[in-house]
Image (cartoon, rainbow, N blue to C red; front, side, top):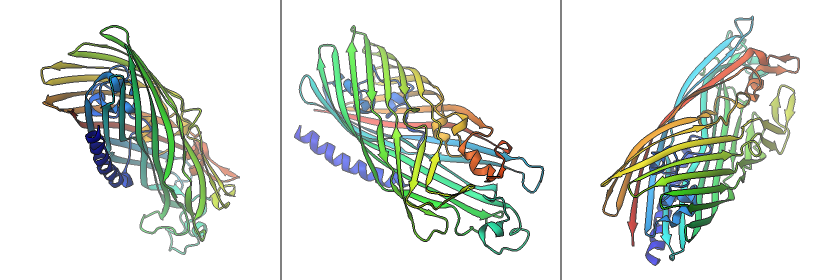
Length: 462
């Protein structure tokens, strides 16, 4: 036990250093990945009733008791988010009409580390650090009309020469980053064919966002416009419960519940030319998750089915930032409240996957369908990760001595979401004053697909 705790402490500190290096540029697939390691990724994320990996701490910690050996597990997921954003503003005046189409690709490193330590014949401890997800997006050089519909010079107070200064066209750039890091510690108890477990999740999060404007050529940044928001380092607690029951020698059933968590994203914002940064109060709620799994397994073949439900609508349908002073500009005047209608919908997922062991090699296949979390009324240019729905995966593992190595190829199939006028994103770009509202003239769409590589390794020790 002393050796295990020392190893865990040293590797945890090293892994925290890696996460600290990665997080400033972290982008992720969404608030939840289908799995947190390469083994389960090869089975389409199916794991609830199969289990057997230390990373069960993040999905169903009851499965920690399936093996009675100490084991370290670590690896990284490398999703490559490919996105195409398009929008169009239609107006009889050709000087106001515009179209945008921008592609952006993001490589999102998501590392993980976990350890399993049997304490007795009935009790097993599991702990680890991993990144379950987050979100990032950045678009730049998008053609826009000035927020109040005036010429660039009249709106900004600049004195640029004609035709640039007299034009109502400008360029907009927008970026938003949000991520989660979890440290989970769980205890599993086994009695007969029943295993139950409880875990505590320590959550670290941060959000960064900015908006900038340039003249239509993109060469001159407009001073005193846009915003720059940075949250403080945010911490929260969550919990996870799991249970697995061995019905027969080959059949198992499992249930897992992950609590919601409220993340305090208080921070500060520089708004336009306001002389100082303004305090911001905000809370983002991560939804709860229910999971039900079934599996059939022998020593050389396992197959499982997972059904999951995410209660997004009760927690993340809106996101509101409250400023300490009413300095944020809108078409109807300045305000201290910035509401964002995310309009996330409750989501369910159904996955099937399995693995086949032949000597030292293991072969895996899987697929998963997710109902859409993001609907048209919540879309904007930066929501690519959360909108993916269906995936297929395949992979293999190789065992040698006390080591196991896993490799997975996973593909989130393409999906496109359209919007014709009901989103906040539309209002922000088509409402110029209380008397000049043109939301039906602005339309946009977002398309995304994600190929991913997952690499993992584990080491068993006494």
